[in-house]
Length: 460
Image (tube, rainbow, N blue to C red):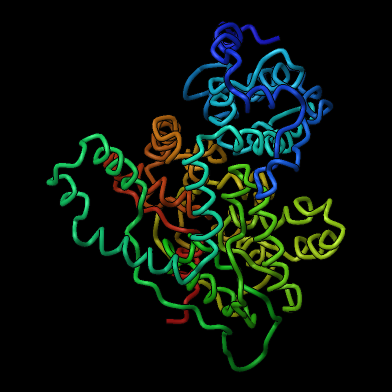
């Protein structure tokens, strides 16, 4: 039972608002909706597993772990509130109206609630089953644009690098200031200005070597998964990771690869995510050694390939074997020894645990172990270190104001640490925290953990 009055208001007004004109909402309450792929008219999406929904006893212990609930104070923006609403929808007692769908889509997908839940509610599975239904009810033009980006831009690395160069030119030339001087609609300019706040300073791109080289003893061989957005926005991080791995006497190959599919999957476009998964499996299945990932979000997705393709008889075994090889870079580095001792680094450091590393991959101790091995570092405790910063893929673009409210709480706690440097392991977190530091005027540097480790272990 959800006592919050906003839930009741949603139910009463939401049913009326739907009228009978929203065909997609009607389909959502009927039990199945069309698959978001090319065969949308014939392939159906099953309802959310009723047993998964029934596992929630609405105890409320998830509430302190939910950033959107903490930011809004509304039950409809909490895990148990969303499960309650999804139960009503799946039972046919409430249509999938735009208002109801918005409460579900306002979830960051950080899965802090799943970590906190004493009843073992699999919220990740619930949300993943809901996402394709939500994708189907998006406005047509918006959905086509999103699918184009997920299918044609992110997987196309040459095109992505060209866009990265264009963004660098835009930033260096003050493109937004030039746009503001034109007679374009002010609202458009304001929106672009808001989005630009989340962009880091785009570095010049330097391609990674296809394979590292070293003399002397070699410990092993591995494959480096560089990511798409990661390699454009934080190309220097991938180079730092390669140097760290070679400092552990590993032979590192950078094989052909494509986008991991995480953004498409989180948007409910599962057909695109599945295609990208098959391509990555083809690229890497015959390449020896662990698959080391530099982005927490990519790693969480790659580790899910076995589940994503579990119903594909042709690919499920290869997908499971692929996922078993995937390891986050911090996970790998903490499990192996460096060939030399780290140099001393004097700094006060706070560690923000990326959701898709801490909650999704359950990699929790290794980053702290790596930091603790460096003399001179003062590790500053960060309250709610494992709480989402509000980035969540493209959440800061689709739900900007709520994202900023979540970020404000994170920055408050970062300020209280007195840290000089905040480290994390995900590109989305990096750009979000950088934006937060600029907005708050905090004299704190935001870096990938690998950059700080590279500073300590570099030979020069």
